[in-house]
Every structure is written in C-alpha cells, then in structure tokens.
Length: 321
Image (cartoon, rainbow, N blue to C red; front, top):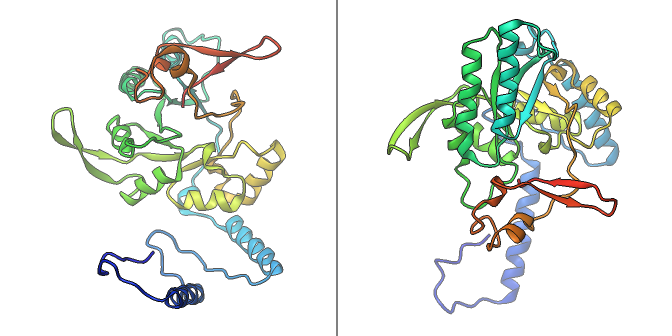
C-alpha cells in the first residue's frame, strides 16, 4: 500500500504518475523474486526456483527425497509404539474415561483394554469447564501407574475478540495443545515454541504467572494432505501432525512412506463422526433463545442438545464450534 497520510489535503497528480508508480512497484516485486531469501531464524531451508512445469516436478521430487532421507536426532530413539488418544467433548466423558483407569488400578480386570490409551484430549465448547477436566485427569495420574497425559484443544474457529485465547489455554498447564489453525501455531512459535517459559497476566487476581508452552500437536484441520505440507508444519514447531480427512487409507500409507523417519510423528483419526456440513447460521440461537448470535444468545448450546431430522427420519446431532 501507499501511505498518503503525509500528503496535503486536496493534493492532485496526473493519472500517468499513478500508472508509472504501479509499473515500478511490479518491477520491484519481480526483482525481489530474483534475490536470495533471508535466512530463517528457525529453519534451514533450500530456496527452489522453477521456471517450467518440468522444473516444478523435478523440485518436488528433490524435496520429497530430502524429506525421506532426513533423520532428525530427536527421532532416532523413537520406538514407533502405537498409542491412542481419546477426544472428550464433555466433563462426563472425561470422568467416564478416568473411572476406567481407576477401576483398572483397583482390580486389574477391566473389560476394556486401555493399555494403549495415554492421552485425553479435552475439547470443550466453553473454556470454563476445562480446568475441572484437567484437574480430574491429573488426579487419576497421581494415583495410578499410568502415564496419562492431558491435551487441551484450541477452538477451530477464533471469533473477533478471542485472539488472546492462547493465554487461557496456557493457564490450564496441559501436557500439550491441539493446534487447529496456522494463526495459533504462528503465535505460539513466535513466543518461543514448545518448552519456552513465558509470563502472562492473570486477570483473576491481577497478577502475573509464569507458564511453559507445552507440546504442540497439529489437528486434521491444518490439512496435511501431502508430505511437503506435513513436513513444513512439523518444521514449524509441531511435535505431531494429524493427517487430513481427505486422505484414503492408501494415501495415508503413502504419506507415511514419504515422510521417512518422521512417519512416527504422523497421527490418523481411527474413529470420528464426520460433519455433514458447517454453517455460520446458529440453530441454537435461532430456536432456543431470543438472540441472533453468540453475543446475545446466552450460550444456550452449552445447556441443550439439538438434532436435525432428515427426510429419512434419522436424527443428526448439531454441535456448536
């Protein structure tokens, strides 16, 4: 853009000057493409330039080969054990999972094998109940031999005025954060990334508190549908990345193969109710309140369950996001 604040009121110039300025701007932009990129503070990447389609294919093949051959030090001790994470959308679900661990510790004859379960992902619509869920999971871990971890899920959609949600998530002191947008990933890595200690303001007692940015895990919404995208996201500070919903079983297998040693950082969703569609229109606010949006509806979605009945008589659960 052009800063016109310094110009006098009523200033005029010929149209030819504006056209010449536009031409110069395009010329400067084209010349900038020919200059070497500045070295990134976080990553050591090669800079590839392709002028033809054949060049593009060759560059993609070269990048995939480099990704497959890379062997990070942090992954050399990875045993590749399969682990299971369970996502809970309510405190009742968190409590039910915790009860399973407690019954297993008491009599060791649980009917459900939970030996592979090592993470509970807390994905609540409202932030208010997260602290109670985290405390419940911590309680189970302190009285059992399990290495149960608690992961807090970030909102998939961050509405205006919620840009500081990362502070609320960090205050819960989880073992990890499920990152669902590149904006949140950028924000947390700009603060120093996983392991960085930062000081945030606690509005409840008007004091500051020191928290540590936990492990960052990428959700399917980051759309890691190919090896290059998955690699870039992992390089951006993620510990693990979930494959995109668009991939078939064969495509996920190919993705894992192309990632080489980093395949141990790849996760897949094995059971999930796929959303039929998303809509900005809120049926909760429309039919259960006198409001029109989350700003004046009273958050009725936290206290009510709504289903939409289709033409076949099947009820489809509606979830607020």
